[in-house]
Length: 472
Image (cartoon, rainbow, N blue to C red; front, top):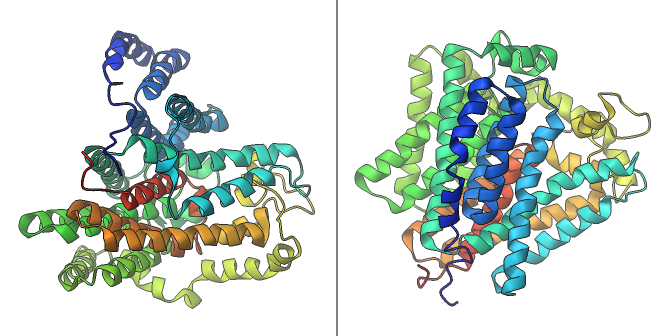
């Protein structure tokens, strides 16, 4: 493959034109004028994202992480409009991608082992918009908001084709996760903000986030389980990067994973713990690095010892019960509704339409269940959710995508010789294994920011598969 550093190499200088709006943004924030904040801050940001797509990806990942937090701090804002900002960012970067492709049509970057599975799953979702079993076309249109995330794959494949950009993407991703973990730890030790307590009460989220008097922390994201999974994501990436490190760097990388693992534990979620075990198993089996295995086991043991000596017996007990799902009341409830609604899944091979199952459908009906539909059916299991919405045909396509992705990432890890790229591929392999297993207990692929990060990670994995030493 020829040397290619991306089509936006000289697009940073126009960003200087945006500096005059800094004063206007500060003035809007000082007066707390929300309309001005949107006009002065968001509008210039969107222009900057069009000029520099790399900046846009970081902005999108960061914003997706704090969207639920913004809703809690400003509960009178329309939640759907706040979420639409992410779709706007993706569409804007997609338009830039289209402009660059029109100028220099070159589809070679998109030829990967995962491309056909990805396009098949995406195309199927587009057809699902017109599912006749859906209550209305509106559900399918809203469902396309999740489908838009696929643009992240092609954006990464196009604009991060250089070693420094890949490094910045991984470092930026880990920085967001680390800060998020610190905020969750702050919640655990210092308590929630008043607005966060209000959110728990007004949305009835307290039913799942206050267990036996313990408040499960959720950071800036939508729920405790999502918070736990994104912290596991960071820990697995750091463990993968530790593969190519020695001495103090190895110790530093594993040490950075400790706060993320601790943040996962204080979320009081068992799904992320099972996902962590799956991710670690994938990393250790692929690398066969027994020193890394011993270091990881020592890291987990140190975390358990710390919880025990700190008097956090309830957290430690919660971790240990992850291995006993039969004794978990929530697990039994989930198995119950799976058995109840499995016949409906089997009788509709193409499902009941996008955005119609679980909380997604309730968000459009104002919390009202519609008889004879899948709206309101609990969908903690992501495969079950996709089955209800897209039928077993859609689930089959999604499993094809996941299996192709895991196998392709494993083969990429085996072929790569550049140490850092190889380590990133190993970390991604662990993340994909974690998500594939974790999706059995939580609908993680439709949660912010995991939905956005998942497709960016797919693009990164596909990009590593094309990596050549000649890249700058």
